[in-house]
Every structure is written in structure tokens, then in C-alpha cells.
Amino acid sequence: MERVVESILLISALSSALIVFFIVLFMLKEGFPALMLGKDFFLGMEWKPSHDKFGILPTVISTLIVGVGALAISAAIGVPAAIYLAEFSPPFLRNVLKACVEMLVGVPSVVLGFFGLMVVVVFIRDFFGGGGGGGGGGECILAAWFILAIMTLPHVVSISEDAIQAVPRSLREASLALGATHWQTVREVVLPNARSGILASLILGMGNAIGETMAVLMVVGNPNIPSVPTSVFDAARVLTSTIVLEIPYAMWGSTHQHALFALGIVLFAIVAFLNIITTAIVRREVRKKSV
Image (spheres, rainbow, N blue to C red):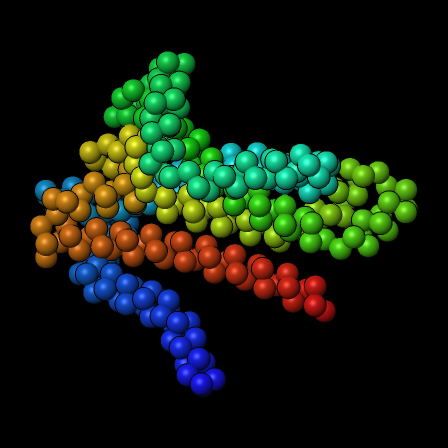
């Protein structure tokens, strides 16, 4: 009976890996013809399916700009919030604030996108004169930054706070015993020791921002012809929104359809790379603490 249970658990453990393997295999099979375009695909500056031009460089650049900008806003708010919750907040207030932050994870992305469309986009249109580059009434990179920052904030705050609280209490006590203030202890002792965990939370948040679809689709503008944005008020095309917008009318078996699957492969590769970096940082920290 024990061997049967072990076999069932092994199959359950392998099932996730097998599902990911077959998904990646299917994507590679469908996207391979577009990947074989080589330089014209990866470095091309024009995405015009009607003219058989499938250059993804502007879309990739726009995706990275949107992800990095959202991460910068999230880090500017999330890391100080994590420091306050872990080091300065009274226990009752910490429980309330952390619960409120973690509730953001449960908000559907379409709801955040609708909030961005009705509030953030309208605010940008009224106070900054609307989006440029085809964005029209405020749908632009700046709006996408704010919405994605809200979505990544729970990851940054929760993981950063856990990393700060994981710093041994003995280090804090030693610093205070030497005459350092609480803030000096946090700045010179706690944060350097929690640096790897905080960095891992930022990289994980970056992967979450790049892979988001519905919310960014609703606020980023999506011009008909992708181009490299030159302003935060420009509309942009990111990898996820391009796939969602064009897959309904892409003819099955055409180069257009293969190119959209190739976009999915590129997106998967970027997010996988960020996850690998996060895992490497966490493992290095674990090894460092075990020595």
C-alpha cells in the first residue's frame, strides 16, 4: 500500500512538469516556422501581417519598458512599505495593512483594467492632454505603469517583508548594543542581509508585470502598427496584447499564426529567465546562511 501511495505522489509531482513540457513543445512546433525567419523576426522593426512583415523588436522593447516602469513604481512604494511593516509597525496595524495589501492579489485583472480605464486613463487625459502615438484619450504607457504597479505590489511587499523578518534577531541586538539607533540598524544591518530576498521579490514582480494580459490590454493603447515609444504618453503594443488582439483573425497555418505562437515563446523565455534568476538568488542566500 505504501508503494502505491508513493507511486501516486510521484505521478502527481511529475504531472505539472509534463504539462509544462507539452505546452512548450506545442508552442515550439507552432512557432518554429516564424523563429526560422531569424534576424527578420527578432530584429525586424515592422510588424505588418498584411505585408508578411513580422519584426518583433518594437513590441519586445515596449514590453520591457512597461514592465520596468511598473516595477520601479512598485519598488518605490513596496520596499519602504515592507520595511515599515517588518520593523516599525505595531503588530495590530501590521496585520491590518498586510491583509489589505494581500487582498490585491484576489482582485481580478479585468477589474483592475476597468479601474484603470475609468479612473487612471481619464485622469491622464484630463491633466496631461491624453496619450500620444495613437493612444487617444489617455491610454498610454503611464496608465499601464500604474495598473501593473498595483498588481505587482503585493508580491514585492510580502516577499520583501518576509526577507527582512528572516534576518536573525541576534544581528539587530548586536547593532543596538553597539549604540546604533533603530533606523541605523535597519539601514546598515537588516537591509544588507535582506538584499537578496528583496531583489528576488522585484524580479518576480517584473515577471508578473511582463506576463499580465487583460489589465495592460485595456489601458496601454495598442496602436495598429507597433513602434518604439518615445514618451510615457505614447500608446504601445506589448507581447501579450498583440497575441490577444490578432489571434482571432490569424489564418490557421499561416505565417501570421506561427508568428503569434513565436511571440508566446519569446514571452515564455523572458518570464522563465526571470524566474531562473529569482531561484538562483534565493538558493544562493540559503547556501550563504547554511555556511
